[in-house]
Length: 353
Image (cartoon, rainbow, N blue to C red):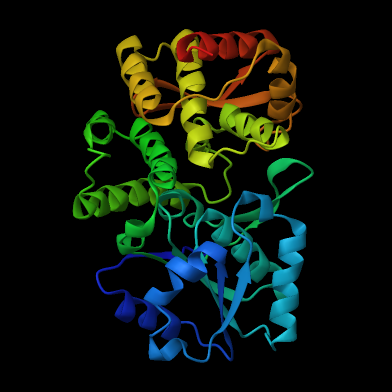
């Protein structure tokens, strides 16, 4: 898998121009959703080198991350003369970069694309690492391919139009990166003021977070080994996300991951000795900032069933990434149903639901 170039932008006009010039093309397309069309496209639409670009607009939100939207993008590309030599720019959050990357990677067996993530979640997670895909059959990211963008351009200027819920959603992935890296970075994230945001300081934190993910992806591009570290919080988190979607009360991905981190750090505590004080500190931070997903014990079996469909599983065994300590990653850890029910009990008791 080719390594994508990640650029922390100081001048988006110049950085995007250089990225486009490095990708020779016959036609240029820009994919946006209904939100980024209004809030983010105006920041680049005046760039003269984009004046011939055709804009494709899709519905906003994870409910549109499906095969119908994918087919619409393919049709728009085909109807407006895209060839194997065309180039697509995905301007949006994780839904746009995931679906747009998958559309580009499969249209005429693959056209080049550039990601410009506009949410914190997309900057530190979705747009970096080459994973693309859509939701299918009620399951998150069930269909997709590993296919990296040529370039990922990260400019925190876009975050100034982002609401606090979406900012927190991305911050959960940054917290995960802190937990799998160093105590210093984990503590720095817990102490960052999310109420009075210093965007210059945030850009530095984002750059650090992206470098952690880049380093892991470079070592293990196809998630055979250490890249599984990036799944911390996601085995339970994806189940929470799927349950919420099924019950018509969808939650943001990062919120589900934050709640999943509570469960999986508790499992780390009982299974591999993750320190109790750091478990408590992390839980307190998540409780204060992310609230709670409520469910009752009658939904345990459904949550367990969602976990059995997780892509990380092998031979029917539910696979977890656990932590022995901050930075001490333990991949390929398994749990039986009894242990998972205990984890869910702990979550409900701790979160008061």
